[in-house]
Length: 222
Image (cartoon, rainbow, N blue to C red; front, side, top):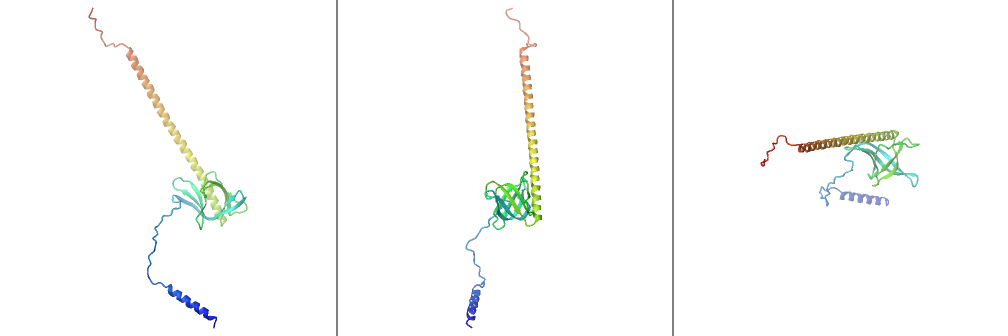
């Protein structure tokens, strides 16, 4: 019987606490009123063309080993106006950026030797707030996701190459057009100068000739 007393007292304490926690229906006004704050991610002007779960590593040159950067979501984000694409990866819990760089035409991605769920590439990354040359390795949960990532990576690099070529062609066309306009202006200016010189020459010749229509009056002394 002695052993049951503490249990009984414990149950009575729980019932008392439960009674104290009962909802009385009273409404308590908050002490501090919080204003709604608009949260921006910096991705508002971009469209996601890839979104996959993965784990990212970077190669530590000093230690000659791979170090984990974080596990989360990797995205390819295409800017709505410029058409440029960047790779962004955030850690799933903290949302801290662990990769942030443009995908340019000179980049290549390849399968990591010995692991068909991983691939590697070089990039000039800005995740830490300054540009750094990084060697990345990313690992996916399946071979299919890894292949999808690599295919999209190469597609983006090729598209950026075409964008550069188109911009170069547009720049060249604009330069040629500008040169043509300037050349035409120079020709017009030269033509005006020649015409002005011809007019001046005619006026000089006309001033040197006697006026045939002008009559000479006889001298009064004759």
